[in-house]
Amino acid sequence: MTKRNYNSELIDNNERKYHYNFDFDVMHHYMIKSFIPFIKGNDVLELGCYKGAFTKRLQDLFSDITCIEASKEAIDEVRCNMDDNINFIHSTFEDVTLDRKYNNIIMTHVLEHLDEPVAILKKIKEEWLHDNGNFFLVCPNANAPSRQIAVNMGLIEHNSAVTEGEKKHGHRITYTFDTLERDVKQAGFKVVYRSGIFFKAFANFQWDKILQTDIVTKEYLDGCYKLGQKYPDLCSSIFLLCQ
Image (cartoon, rainbow, N blue to C red; front, top):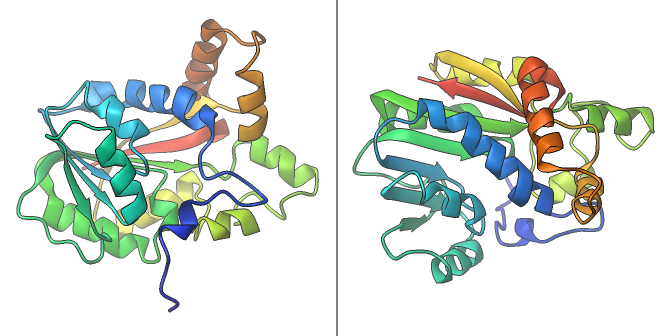
């Protein structure tokens, strides 16, 4: 297997950006909103922190934060903008060994990047998560309306396809509920809650343009979040709470 360059995978390419303002300003807010009812205690392990935008939100909820990130450049940038009390570990999930377990483990938009997702999920369950802890798993949804529209436009071959731009960013799979639940169950997890996060008919780059205008209000965004709970398979991201 070719050795991966995790720093280069973070670079924007001709097809897509690695992250959009829609992710930071909209999706992160509603992910936290989805997680809050299930949080246990004050400790959390974040698996993959990128440049820390989501980690900053975790600071409002947890006093004991550990982050594992494979990109050295991302870690260096996060450390410059974060409190000193956050424990950052520069390592791949495959290589790292932790000396403790956590009540809360969060993995958002990371599993689809892993070469051996089931093996890492087993490691999370057996080595890192307390027996009564919660594992919060969020992945981009292959069946999001924006993606289905792209298929009908001829831009993507099928809903679960991995585009060239996604491949450059290290994506290995585009999950649906059934394939995501397949992997977590193979790892020995029990799914105790499933939901979608944010009904999404526009692509990320379209949302970034819309968010610069007054076309949508906070109430509209809240409405998309609530509609996503009613129709989880038509959301931007899918969310499984695992134990």
